[in-house]
View 1 (cartoon, rainbow, N blue to C red):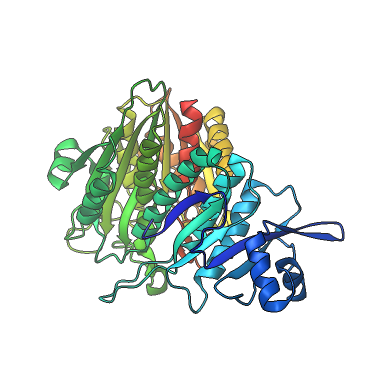
View 2: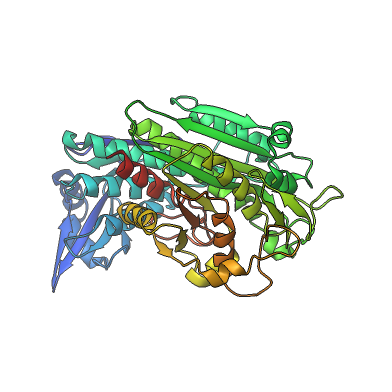
Length: 494
């Protein structure tokens, strides 16, 4: 979590610099939530008026996520955030507290601040939401610089009783995982490429009981991973497939996670226009998400077996690059007529899904920044979900609701499946038609899931990279889906 600490306390710590409190409204009545005697004393001493009255005079309102920064009162400063109605949901609370901490972290003098969140939290689910929102809102992209830069927020304290320790532990694990997924997604592609990404994954999970296997280009060739090798063949930085395995005693459910790890996507020979190439270092977000997730699951000690595959390649044009019209033999022996080298993600994912299926999991969930078409359909804040099984889809949607993340189920129809017909190979990697691109990609991946295995595909192309900050979401890599997948594992663990 960078240098940020996340703690519980029953009262206001003496080293607090900023206190976050809330406002709710019922009809015409606006109420302060989380006011503390020490805070009121400081403000009455400095301004002859308590925090609540000063906040209202300054224009503070209970509208969800509205943030008002009050002038400092001695060594303390109050930040007031709108919570909406008194029965605020975990999702709303996470967003509101995230907005407050984004504001705090953006203050001109923010450096190593100790922030306390005081919102009268008595429910573990609400405390976890507040802790996650606060820590995720405080996140800042790490700059590549020779000069050491201090975190704007160094310490976060949530006012609550010690009975909430388990909820805080869940929040810590989730935040640590999301931070790492964000950090990897924000790393420039000359610094994070398949070899360095694979070793970073190994280092990230080394403190947990997670087995690590890294297949290099020689092992991939020996294993017949035609999709991964084709996509990575145009780059001097050779591809990798990382397999992570967590197998606790007593686990009765086996979850397989598969992530797309294209560390930079130029489009290959079907090269992207310059404007579309910007930001393509984040095309490895799916791999970052599944690696971070398995670490969080192990850290929480969940009784569920998890195997994660991260398919890593750099898609570049060169004399050794794969071509449109190439026929590729995939890991499971199926042949694919390639239709576009800028539709590379589905090829590396297909190999990884087919490999994951050999482990005989109960459920495979793949995560990928796969198609611009999904962004056209659902916008930039909602991820797409496709599945071969309604029970599997419901599992993921329930987990997403618990985590407060937005997914929308899309269909894979027989008409879409027919569009993958090929005259020269078992099937094509894409359609000759313009429309339904996200569904076509889902239909392609579905072909690598053996009958009898439940599968869900998460297309996170929109929400994985945000072009503006909102709630607890920063500009840049977001780490979306980490908390949903952890919640999915918690449900499976029982």
